[in-house]
Image (cartoon, rainbow, N blue to C red; front, side):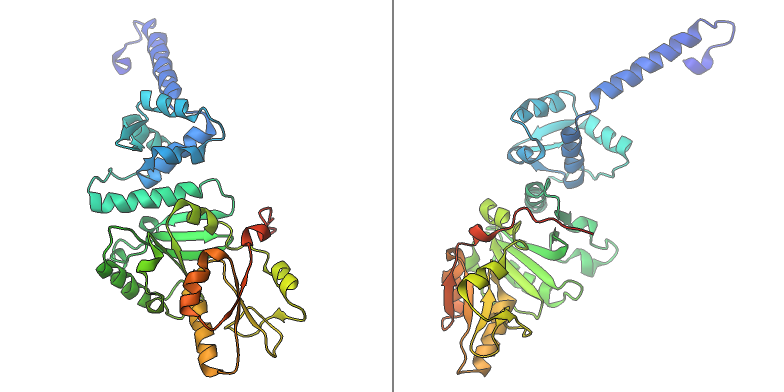
Length: 328
């Protein structure tokens, strides 16, 4: 309409400008200004799904349900069963921000994976030194050997990258074996995290490949929260309370030693590579003993794998340095 106006009717030019300003103002009024709301929308654009329950990780107040309803009313997001997904204006907003999106996936086999990835990423969303990068942003889409890999992403915790896998309750023994095969091919990452619905389903001896660490943890929320502190246990303080005259070990099968009769290994979570290194040491040194420091949550499983070790039970939650500061 504006382009067809001739200079013989100059009064219509300001009218077009007013209409344009009105349209722009209306568009701007739809899009959110609140930082937390923007982060939530960008997260959904990136991960496709967000559980309604997980929305709490994006806000610092108890009024967030009202914020969610407001975004739904503005057609920026919508509810799909128990999840939040992008709506029409949400996709438009992603274009404004320059963030790429993909069409929403509905097939259950794939969405179960997406939903767990979203849940994992949302838990660590506000953690300053923790980040989760989904596999879709890592895998080379032009290589079938890469797109068929089983890992779900990389969990970065205080600068350490953990290539992450998930074994859900729907996954069969066949799938677990495919994860083992997948890990046999891994050459780039030295730290692995396998999340599983029930750790009893995992034969730990099958998950030894020579990595620096291979952590097996259950996928319950309390265990995912526990993962946050994997780099923040004050082990020197614990060791000083339990031992005298020991130092950081130069051996790969223990963490502390006195180079005589004390070979001490610390366990915050189940680490199959650590277990294997201790077993190799004890097999080659029948007259030696290994000391293990851990808490009550994993001693039973460790005891099955290392029955001859001496165990020192410690409440590790008392030794978490939650206020660690990282300096460049």
